[in-house]
Image (cartoon, rainbow, N blue to C red; front, side, top):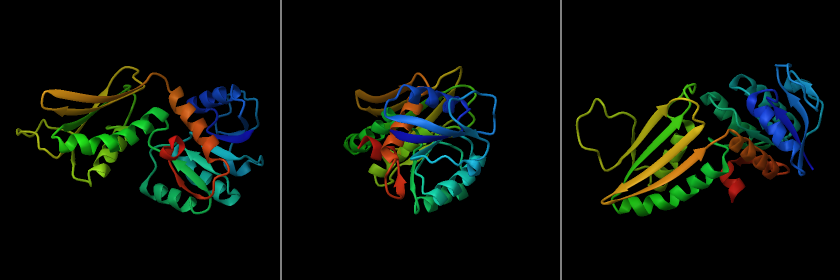
Length: 251
């Protein structure tokens, strides 16, 4: 049985993951950390990670950027592996993540969905074949009207996976409204749509002469991210220090 410390246990994702793990025979949450105490949980909850005196095999983090520094301190000191799902980290914090990985196992990905991470792998195989054949590449992402950043981190990760496979040959284009000219062969267009309650849609379009191939991913519930985080925690528990991502989980 894998013992999990849920960092950000009273948030939307924390509560969703707690529900998923209740149905999981291979894992259990032994403690939680959250500054908000208005939720009843079947495990002890601490207001600060430094106050936690419960031993766990791995931490799942869905909190906020302001809480990540103290979390990394704790994981370094206790050598506890951590699945880091919090987004919006500063450059300094991202560097801190790499430093923490020297002392304990740290898994961080732009998107915790198993489907998205398999898509990243597939794109690295597809891009060289289709680009060589003259296909243009465009990414369209759609999210709910409360999302602050654009394009999404996942769209950026999809673009980066393609560009990495193409030896960084492509330039990202986010807006063509101010330029009246034909599309360049080495452009990779990225468009963002915001509206309603869309959880997360990503289309990667390879448009060639007389044919179009589209890779699509639809997230119908935030549960896909929670399931991925739990799968990542099971993978990470007991791993040696180092930097991991979801590509390691899917193999």
